Every structure is written in C-alpha cells, then in structure tokens.
Image 1 (cartoon, rainbow, N blue to C red):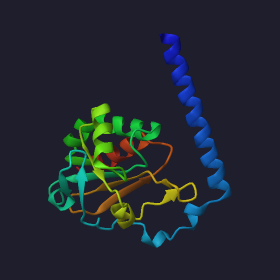
Image 2: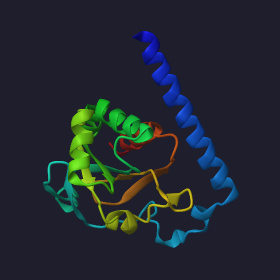
Image 3: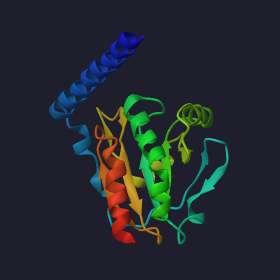
Image 4: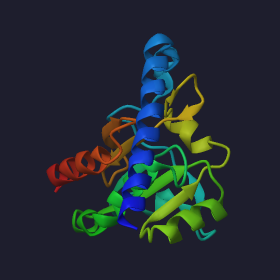
Length: 191
C-alpha cells in the first residue's frame, strides 16, 4: 500500500514537472501574455471593482458588503481540483484562522460552476468562499493576465485594504503556496 502511494506521488510529480516544463518553454518562446495590454490590469493603489458572484453554496456574495469592514485577499486561480490549485486552496484553508486574526476575508475566484466549486470545497474541506466567475467577467475587470497562449487562466492574488484599495499583487502560476505567505506578510504590515 505504501509502495502504491509512493508510486502515485511519483507519477503526479513527474506529470506536474512535464506540464510546468512545457508551459515554461512555450512561454519563453511565445510570450503572448507579455504582449497583452497591461493598461487594463489593476495596479497597486487602484480601487477594486464592486462585483457580485455566487459562492460554492449558490449564495450571492456582494464584495461591497466587505469593503470598509475587513481587509480582503482575493485570489484568482485556473481551475478546481488541479494539483497547483488544490495546494493553494488547502494552504489558504490551513491558514484561514491566521487571515481572520489579521482581519481579512479570503475569496478564491475561478470560472467553474457552483457545483464544481461545491465539490472542490467539500472534497478538501475548504473553509472560505469560492466564487463562480463563469463568464470571467470579474477576471476581466481585474485584468488578470493569462498564460500559455491565453489558454491558461492566470494565478494572481490581490491584497486589498479595508477601503477597497489594492495594496499588493502577487502573480505566479507555479508558486501557488507562496501566494499565502505574501498575503499574510502584507496584511501584518496593515495592522
């Protein structure tokens, strides 16, 4: 049983490594995301747009209900239940109380449906809102860049102060768990 678990982990690691290598090579050869219109991307100092999206339970979450009350960590991720996205979500889950202690609410946003988010949240016992941006409307409002010829939605985390102003942006497709550390460090500076 242990040998099978080790083999499964090894196979997953090799698969992740192959995909990451392919994406890196293609991104270097064809840096389409670098040619994107950067003027549409929100920057540090910008106010976030007000938006409403359904969470994994089908409840409509209006972000303006949190502005003025709490700091926000809004992270955009490519897809439910993929290796990097799972690591990132589970890291946010495991450190969620730390975010609460820093007076911050965490929101994960991707383009999957309510049922996909619900299954992902239940499978990994996620304790924060996953918001369904099925038409990528909010992703576009934030100007979240894409990778891999525009086919892979970007992984970007925004730390937002109580007033709704962006105070930090971290963009990394492959350092999924570093998003959590970066967000916590910035939030500590806000307190």
